[in-house]
Image 1 (tube, helix red, strand yellow):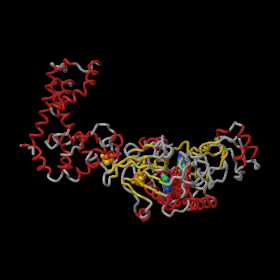
Image 2 (cartoon, chains in turn yellow, orange):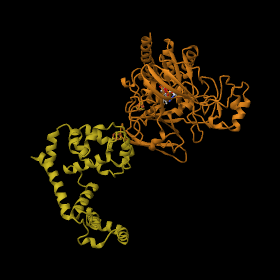
Image 3 (cartoon, chains in turn purple, cyan):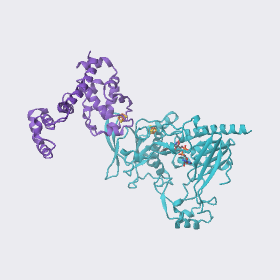
Image 4 (tube, helix red, strand yellow):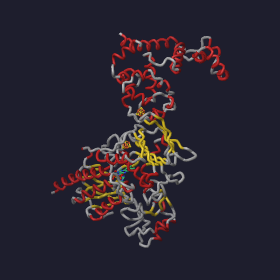
Length: 208
Length: 428
Ligand SMILES: Cc1cc2nc3c(=O)[nH]c(=O)nc-3n(C[C@H](O)[C@H](O)[C@H](O)COP(=O)(O)OP(=O)(O)OC[C@H]3O[C@@H](n4cnc5c(N)ncnc54)[C@H](O)[C@@H]3O)c2cc1C
Ligand code: SF4
Ligand code: SF4
């Protein structure tokens, strides 16, 4: 268990809803859910989740902390926004899903092998280097996410797509050597540093 | 209409539904002078479009008939149909009101023999049947209409149909030169009883009321049951005229939803429970009703009704707000998609017919009132000092069933009576 996770357990004890309200982006909306089920019924991924949104919200209120935070459900959200469009209480469900996923990741409780989680972290690491996504490197790192052999296979299968993208100038082999970035890279560093500092301060508060 | 006599001891009642009629009669039977105006060609309001009333499941006609008799018998009530309020100014005890009366083109000589209706060819969507089915260009609004007098649709005036109607009438009751009339009166208090209208189901995009023939509203369902209605009292579905035996009811269609109406419309749970008894009445054990709901709001005395419906094995309840409806092209069956929140199973359930339990909204939008009145967030009129002697009755004040609408009408009559009594006292 990470230090922060330990600190949160101690801080909120039995009140997981309170913890979510305080720490999860848009988490204070969870209490507004009336359990109508329209979000769950609207989700294109519905049959494949362990817990659709409305069930997650009920579990939060019921204090099922471990089950919620280690669930892979919120990682399944495709941001289609069907649920937000239909929720009679105007809950920003999509955003809550992402908030929950992020919080679980920060606490180190998110399932390690969850592919969306892995992709999100890779995407982030790739993006912060230059302020622009390097499609080539991101693509390659994704192909090899599940090991070398698997990676070669995936890369071969995706080759026509890659060639097409190159033709359309959406992808350049030169990207492998450096690649494009934002003009003001110092400014970008400063923004990221500040964000990191705010985040670290938050975490430090609970780890002290 | 020069013969209308009104003073600041007169009470004006706007809207001739069950609430307006009740308020008018209560005041008149206490000896007050009342002018009752109704926008449509007959009184009764939306209750006259119901097949049966909950909780007792009697036909609305009997209640209507009693009220009609009371109106006929009471010389203190003056009824003006096809009339609306154009302007209001003044204050409690002294309002100047301008009324506008649309031409009916049919005089009091009419015996409702129906010859003009036979003679006329043009047909229009029937208002009484919510657009299911047609009525003629010369018509009686419905069987129980009061006054029992025909109306000509203004759009046939100047066409050969108008002449045909006039020539067909043996009683010389048709006057094609009738014009809109404006009347100015003074009254002491105003009871606003303009009622409700069903929420526009077209706005509820995921339910496809605008796209799927076999998705209808609860008010339309009432019309299907009426022996004088568009299907002769059979539960036939619109797409193919097949008997609908497996019927789904979707609760809170447009209510309790920040995308549509925020409030609970309060009567639609009971309305759907009642409508499941229609399914049983038609088909006995061959019919099937399924209610999709968030929670059932049948409280107080009407809980018994709910318990009885629950005991019916042919009625099932699925705790779920339906996410969307799709149509099975081959059968025309609407297919309901959602999650049963008791167990979290996803379903895709086909039914013969879907009835949307649509919400109630005020029939007059707050910006359309002829004088400023205080309304709540949902557009219903509040009981507020700032409204002077303008009092709301029935569904103009809230989403109410008939029982509560009538209570509210009596209360507003008492408030209005106090105002005109005060005026009378001062004038000694
Ligand atoms: C599907 C459904 C089923 C229902 N079933 C039942 C039931 O079984 N039992 C029950 O108790 N209740 C039932 N209700 C509720 C019932 O319909 C209402 O309680 C009742 O209609 C309220 O009467 P009202 O006079 O306040 O309004 P309305 O019936 O709306 O009457 C208002 C009148 O005012 C007139 N008017 C409107 N605007 C103006 C204007 N500007 N100037 C002049 N006149 C105007 C209208 O033409 C109308 O005649 C049901 C409702 C629905 C939706
Ligand atoms: S749609 Fe909104 S109110 Fe309904 S269950 Fe989902 S989050 Fe809750
Ligand atoms: S009465 Fe029932 S169906 Fe109507 S809005 Fe309220 S809860 Fe929904």
